[in-house]
Length: 241
Image (cartoon, rainbow, N blue to C red; front, side, top):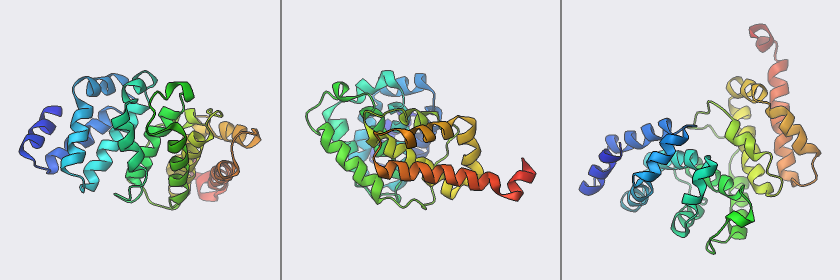
């Protein structure tokens, strides 16, 4: 796949093959750390930056690339390789992107939320500053439409639920609970059962009881809990389950 990307970059061609190559890598890196490592080891970030530079207006391409980087950022051991001024500046700027609806901004926020979750000591670059990223991340999440239909598919919420434990940096929780609120609002039949199966409701109740999360986070947590409660109270759902 990376060879296909390299070929398209050399020829300055953005076509279906290039978009499918990134989409395929997004899929094969999902909760598969060894493939995320292979991506980094084989100049993946260089290709990402080159595609961004050469094809800045290709929305589907950008969404696929950022989705893949979201998978990489979920791997704790690989995050130090993303702790780079150039990479972080790109992610930081993409928080304000309106490309492909909210998808690019959402994925950039997800990458940064996972990196921020490692705490202040792990943030080893001066620019963009951790404080600036926290502020822009929270502002981006507040802008998104919670009822937006999504071009994304979660097989597991484990990476998102992990962020609910990050009380030292509530902005990470903000991104996570917004994701759950959006998905259970728009696709309750798919995602309410997944949250329950993976223990997410208990974590959300923990968030409500904890003093650290700010009110917007608790409001979103309550929305998720209510969405799931309403879903399970639906007579048709009760019949099918």
